[in-house]
Image 1 (spheres, rainbow, N blue to C red):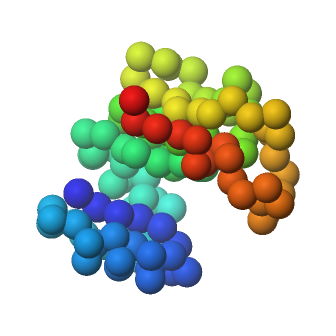
Image 2: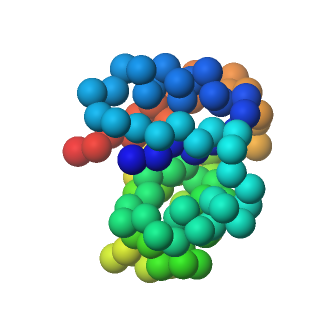
Amino acid sequence: MALTGTEAERELTGRVCAASSDSLVDLSGRTSLGTMAALIEFSRLIICNDTGVSHIAAAVRTPSVVVANGSDPRRWAPIDARRHVVLATPVPCRPCSHRICPIGHPCALGVTWD
């Protein structure tokens, strides 16, 4: 399994790798857009939030689980619902345009794997 993200997220992904009992590869800050697309294309499953990664997975037909945070999943979720599962908590503040949530991220914290 591989973790990806930006260079700024390396501390967080490093903590995730250290806490995991599985062998993880931390690629945060180490992938170009093309490398990321290739990584996604040759993956069996992608777990991501509602960013460009989910759109790349849809474009290359890699199954995904997408955690929809502040975006409107009716507008931005991948079209193929059989291949791409979207997890979204219904919140009245969606869609959100805040870079920093003023009410504590109920859209993200309310998502469960059930």
